[in-house]
Structure formats: C-alpha cells, structure tokens
Length: 300
Image (cartoon, rainbow, N blue to C red; front, side, top):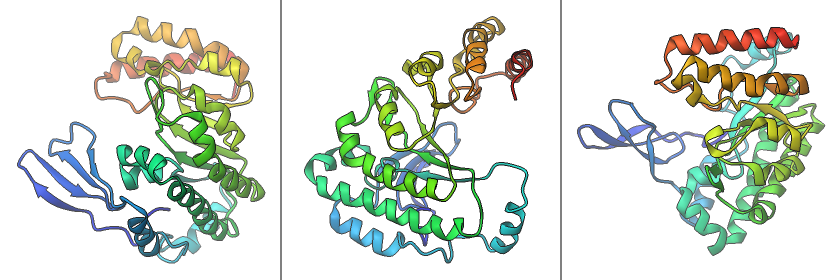
C-alpha cells in the first residue's frame, strides 16, 4: 500500500555500534546494532513538489500487479470462506504517509510553506488507496480497515484541529465513504499521544475505532467513553502498572474494566506494545485477572 517497487533495504553508513540504513519507503534511519531501541528518522525521500512528483510517478502508481502475494488466487478462496475477521492495512494514513516521506519537521513546515502541495498529496493518496482497494474488494469481502497516523504526542496533536480539517479531513471523508460503499464499516485509526482534540474530527471523517489511548498522555478510556458513547475503543490499560506490581495491576483493571465492559464497544488491552521491562509473571497475572473480569461481566 506504499512504495512499489520498494526501495532496496541496505546499510548506507556503518559506524560500529550504530548504522544508517535505507528502508523500503526510501527513508534513511539510524539504528543501533543491539536493536535495544526503535530506529530514529534521519531523512525522507521527499523535500518539495519536484521530489513528490518523482516519487509518485516511480513508486505510488495504483496498480495491483506486484503488490499482491503470489498465492493471491488461493488466498481469495480461503478468505471468502473464513470464520475470522479480515482487515485491510495497516496503511500509513493522511498524516502518517507524508510524515514518513518528509520527516516530522519538514512536514510541519510544508503545511505553511506549500499548503497546496499538502492538499494535493492527501487527495492523491485517497484516490491511490481507493484504486488499489477497489481491485481487492471486488474479490474479497473485508470487515475493517486499519490506518496508522501517530500524529499526537503527550501534550496534544502535532497539528491543530483547524489544520486537520483543512489538510487531513477531506482525504478521510473520501476514503471512508468508499470503504462503507464496499461493506467495510469498521475503520480503525492508531495514534499515540493525547488525541482528545482530534477525536471529533476523526469521527466526522468516518473513523469508527481509535486506539491505543496512552494513559501517560492523559487518555482515560472511561472519560472517552462518556464523551463519545458510540466510538469503538481499543486499549487504555496503563502499561506502567504492569511494570509496577500486582497491586498496581489490580487498581488499573478495577478502575476501568468493569465500567468499560458494561458500556460495550471496547476491546481491553494495554495502551501500546508490551515493553521488555514487564515481567512474564506480571503479564500472566494481568491477563488472568482481565479474563476473570470479562467472565464476570458476561460479555463476548
């Protein structure tokens, strides 16, 4: 759903304990050889309209050939008789894709320095994904679409709600309208950080589910449910409690889970990936306690 043909993944510079490498999207990233941390962004392949036009022409053409698995005909048969949910994605969205292409700082500057370029990029992305998905959805029914954005941090969005409405919302409306017209009624968006100010805009744009609701960024799923009764919610369990103690795990679960399960539209899980400093013992305790609360609530 991104660059095709993909860029060659290769090491550009080797500095002993760390190195700079090129990923499949053409971004340069800095990584440590111990793999003890996430790679950091160095530079994207797009800096201006000329770069975008070249990238679009060479890597973002809406042609399915080469983008599907070699055993796609077999997968069609399996998917159409499945007894499990099937999702499109996870695609990098209308902030996520430009973020990867430009880098965060250059992207934020571009909204001011070349707003028409940013509008053009997002409308092109909407048409691009619609064209790709149209070919797939004629052969397979799909339950959900997954979109990665990561456009917020612990103090709020990286762009204002007004900028979201100007640059991001038109693409969402166009894409989600197409998805609904093809039976895909669940649209999930993944964004870290404090997403409070953007929730109404995502809903207006046709998004039905948000996750992971990071507690450290002030996201309380109980408050979110009270504010948005029909929004699908995934996550919201503070991973730090699992690092702490069994007593902290009890407090975290008992504060949120009974209310959320009673309200419905909620999948309980921690508010991000499981960090390595959560002990296996604590994770098992958390999961067994959660199972008991689910059973007590008698939900499916």
